[in-house]
Structures are given as C-alpha cells and as structure tokens.
Length: 407
Image 1 (cartoon, rainbow, N blue to C red):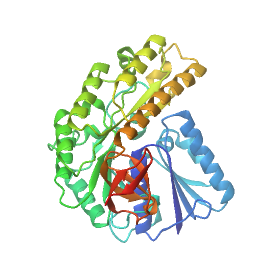
Image 2 (image 1 turned 60 degrees about the vertical axis):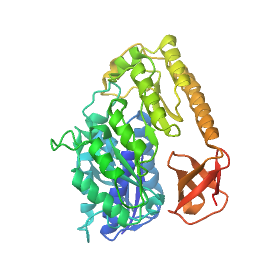
Image 3 (image 1 turned 90 degrees about the horizontal axis):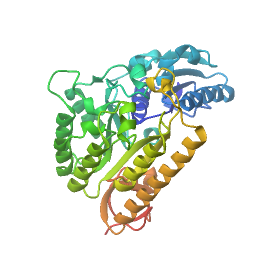
C-alpha cells in the first residue's frame, strides 16, 4: 500500500500525523505522493472558515488528479462537520479526533508498537513532534477547538517517558513536546503528574537530546517551570506564549484568564532568566468590539515587549463560538489593515532579535539534508558548509539568516 498524509493546522495535528504515519508504516505502508498514493489521509484543521475551505479544496484536487485514490479524512473539521466531509469525492471514511489514534487499524494489524518505525527525516522532519495531551477545558470565547478535541486528556507520564526513550533510540536528537492545552498535562489523571514533573524528567535526560516545549498558555508558564528550563541544557530556550490581545477589556471579552500586566511581568521574568531565549506569541486583531483605543493598547504593549516573533490572526467568526454572537463587528478592511500593522511590528522584532545574535556561537541541529540548522533559541540559519542531516554542530551566527561552522 502506497500512502500519503496531508496535514493542516497546529503542531498537535503535526504530531498526530506522525503517529498515523508510524502506524501505516508498521502495517507495511510505503510513503508516496498524494498524486500516486493508494490511500491519502487528510488531517484537517477547523480553527477558521478558511481552514475548512482549504481541506475541501485539497480533497477535491487529490481526487481529480488521482481518481482511484481512497481518502480518509480526520482532524477537527472532520469532527465538526462529518457529513460535509463524507460527501467529498473519494472519501471512504471520516475519523473523528477521539478515534484518530486507531486510524491505522483500518489497514490491518501492525507488526509492532508504534514509535519503532519512525526515524529522523520521515515526512521531511528531522525533529519529532510528540503529543502528550489533547483536549481543552478552557472556554475562550473565539475558540471552536474544545468542541472538536473534547475535554483535556493526558497520557500517563510513564508512557510519555517510554515514547521519548523509543524516539531517542530511533535517532531523534530533538523532540518537540506538544498538546492542545499542554499546560494542563496531568491534571485530569489525579496521579500527581503535571507539566512541571514532565519537564523535570526531560531536563534530567541522560542522552544528548534537546526538548522543545510547544505553545503554553501564559498562566501555565510558572516561575518553577521557567527555573527548570533555564537550568537544563536539555530544554530549548524557546517559549511560545499566546497573548491574543493587549487590551484587558478585549482579554475579558475573549475570556482569557490573565491581564496585560501579568503577561508583561511573565516576559520580564523569562528575559531575566534566559536573556537570549526565543519568545513568540499569537495575536488576534479585529475581535468584535475592538476600537482604536483597544488596538492602540495592543500595539503599545507589543512595541514594549521583548518578543522575537509574532503569529497574527485576523479575526473571523467561527459558527458555534460565543464570539460569533458578539457585536459590533470590525469592518473586514480595517481588520486586514490592523493585521498588517501588527505583522510589521512582529517583523521588526524578529529582525532585532536576529541582529542581537550575530557573532554568537551557538549549538544547533542540522536539518534539510544538512544545508541549514536550527539553534536552541529557534534561529533558522543557512550553513556556509553543508553537512549531514540530524547532527549537532557548533555554529557562529554570521548574519540574520546565515551561519558558519565554528572551529
């Protein structure tokens, strides 16, 4: 069986797709292109209407160029609108998120437990993205994900440690730990496990591997967690902390459980502990009721914060969310203009951070067949000399996008 996996959306979906691919390979599957595959798994996102549309267009295109293909659709859009997805051409099965872990069972029993077939470079990825938690118990007014992923569910800590061990044995030297609400890891289990106990276990790992902690809600990035991350060479100096807005009034409307002042103090605490860490954020512009005063509060805060990159999301109504029923709506042209302004701020901050790293010698992992590297603090740099993929190297940052091997 020739297969392909097409993935939309977040790091959690990326991790899920790797797990699906692991299962297909364990059942004798051979990776192919979507145009030539016998089976294509489309792992969908539904965070916006455009994400839904992109998934539909992709399924139709695959069926048009590969008329005999069997298409299996999973992910958040498949969970939210299964009838719509089932009506798409060549779709033989719609698999909801809560059944995603067993998707590969459709194609027979595997020859061994998942986690033993993946190696660095599968799906073009040198690093492994490992999901340790799914679902969310928060109630952000704009978010559809709790209805598509369900309540928070964590893997047992011992099971995560075993998955990490297998990944390291398979040759992975960087592992990104991710979840829908990663900061809630362990809370549902009642066994004393938590994100802190997980990170502590990773921080003490004996093998030469780097762990990158994926997106954390600001209220989950505790002083204890920052301390552990700052003191261990095993944990990448890299944070992604969604702000969403700089106006406390907008944060309340979004039902975000922190204030702009709390967020500012959190970033200051990280910068004190890890001055050269990458610190990224997500921002929503054009939320219902956002006026010039709210937007000025957002841009003023962003200009002040020592962030290194921004992901900017122009707000669009997502049916089924409380925010879709809020008014007044912001004119679409104004939303796009505000998004442009915030992206410009993000680009300036990214350039400033990269410039601050020029001349530093950093440890990095080679990716893209050894033609580039990614540092612990998330600089993506081209190498002046190509080396093999998945190797630790010491590099000197020559410019914002280039590095040389350090002697």
